[in-house]
Image 1: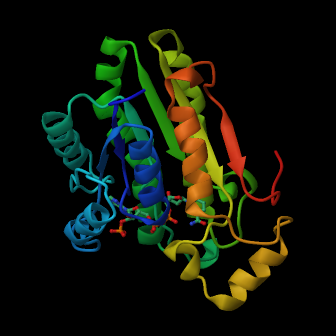
Image 2: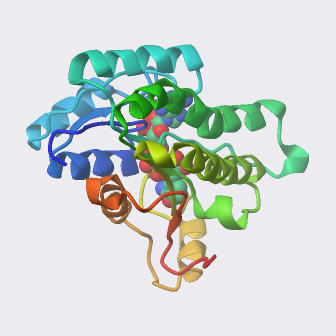
Length: 246
Ligand code: NAP
């Protein structure tokens, strides 16, 4: 497993950061993608260096097909062919459907679902040629059960697993596994933005009685990314503290 090249989109985010660290800890050379104008990838990279991690930081909007082509090219020139892809970039723009604008719908579908096509399409042929690949799509419990105020996000995250199952079948004979990981509510900025009252109400619905941690998501990602996990494909692994059981 040592030295495999991994790209984590949204790698500088709350969950993405822990995934990058966990993949590096298992010997991978890791690139974390980020979005200029919102994120500060350089500061993140310096903080990671201070913590002993050396990550490449390709910039690129995953909602834009041409930008992902450039981003993947930059990673492959720097680190070599991408063998592990974690599609982790994502966002929310919540609102009831009867008040949702077309912009709110489009930006979430483009960022959370189109992005999976955009980035995976750049790496799939190389994985097929080399007869090895690990693709892990970070979905959500809300793609499994639906969530009030999140028709856009629930649709995108449910669509992600349809993509996983179809591509898993297309790629199975090529040594490529494709899996979905569906986190429940995890302690990151995305959840902190919901506010204290909503978080308290959410925790009341989680049998384990707390939010999950990004490390708990990263643990499953590294499990799926391992060479030894070649018989697990097309799965959707729930990590939600018992909140939803499929
Ligand atoms: P986060 O900290 O906001 O991280 C999301 C990352 O995606 C950020 O680095 C963000 O960059 C990046 N991103 C957003 N739009 C992008 C774009 N167009 N192009 C490139 N990068 C973009 O959130 P998180 O909690 O770690 O979430 C990571 C993933 O887990 C997401 O897919 C999310 O839907 C999923 N998830 C999270 C939870 C949870 O409870 N936290 C639960 C279920 C699923 P910027 O900072 O520049 O926007």
